[in-house]
Image 1 (cartoon, rainbow, N blue to C red):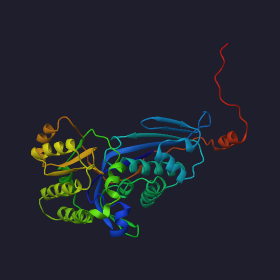
Image 2: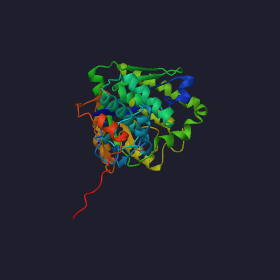
Image 3: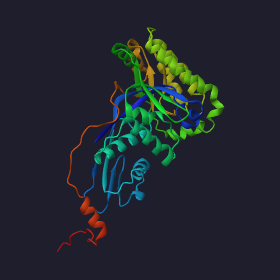
Image 4: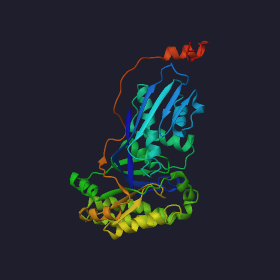
Length: 350
């Protein structure tokens, strides 16, 4: 069983898309939080009419990998050249399509669990790079590279994307008190709007060069945000910078925001929030707000028709949290495939 964290991106989102950073480089300031995707995997015993059982928001019982409809499951199994019966169960602390990097978190967690099942221990870099390859090259998804990296490594990091494809993860060396101060000023709310990140991203990634001035401004804000955290400046400056970044991000495409998101953000600002953003590509999902602790009650009251999600930072990244050896049915599986074993059937009642 693997446990893989969701992430919150502060600055630099968009510069982690290959069409941009392969030319100009990119960077993000991001943290993972104590909300997780859990994936339990086991070899499937050969006593059933199907070889693959996948349980998530729906269930699939399939005889072959080609029959699996879940794209990430199919992509990971094809990448690993999987040849055994398999059962997968997914449980998440937060809903999918919410801007928390859930699809990439799923891919990282599944890859980690399956390597664990095979008795292998991949590095965090291997998990990140292989997950990026699966999503961008095999599945051809319009996704960036920060989500997979954050999920694999965990922690509060400055992640740098080089034009040659190299990815550098630099943990922020902040005092415990400064981290707690930042953490105590952040609030998370669920808008209730589900959206597919790749659809929103598609609306601006294909012509991302036309927004180069905005992209360079977002990149500069990463370093500015890090400087604020490392300095003795009032932490409120970090919140004000988040507001500036959101005003830039919403200019990327009409799909990044909408009237409900704008109205929700306006209510939060009027109640005392200094800044915030819709997480991920935009359009809905989760909204992060930067709110002084003495104004958080007023913000909750203003947004009382939205779900407030308390959270803390986490620093472990994807982990195998349970492992136990099981009966090896591999010989029985091979025998069933090669011999004309009688098909399973219902007992005829007398």
